[in-house]
Image (tube, rainbow, N blue to C red; front, side, top):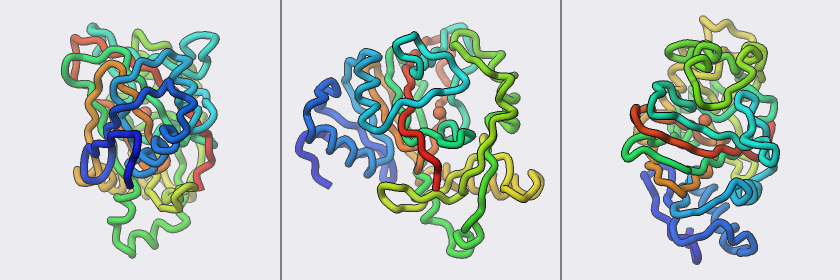
Length: 286
Ligand SMILES: [Fe+2]
């Protein structure tokens, strides 16, 4: 793929690219947005460096990838941006938001296809985000395993029942600054989706499963399901399928939840980190 406007620097051999030389406030530059979508489909996560985006700018940029979606577990940042959430960890806090490998909000009937995250303030080092390419992970499975997974449906839960350190209620209680909400609703929020999903734009198959959110396979017990869920999760995050994205203020990451997982690393205690998050493009996984 060649790009006329974007300067594209792949981050690893499998997933992720840094993008330079663009200003995402140029909403009328059609070629820029076409190329950005191409890069997004090619690399699954793009880290657009050197931006200066207001919440409105971020909304307009994000909505090139779909309509804004609500996030059930954090309040919107203000009335004008009800779906945009501020992700903050203060120097005094120990718990972060977004740790442990996952695709965003798969417990919704129509999870967002795309997540955007804009860095307002970043620690001097640390606070990186890991990404995994679940399309490449699916491709690397044996034909026998691919056949076994055919037609398998997963039960995805918001409860965070298996999160290291405690479920969503316990986790939320440890978060002080972020405006978390609806902790009591989490156990009831479940959806069923295929474990292998097909990307509507590329036709490629990807694993859609995580130890964090996939409780069990439909029609099976947790005891029967968890070992295979854990194996698939661990397979997806093998180093050859991943990349690690460093942040700097003004960086705008856009990623495809249909073929990736991510994990926010909590290694910057004593420093402040502030991001703005907006998800777009609700879509039933197929
Ligand atoms: Fe996330």
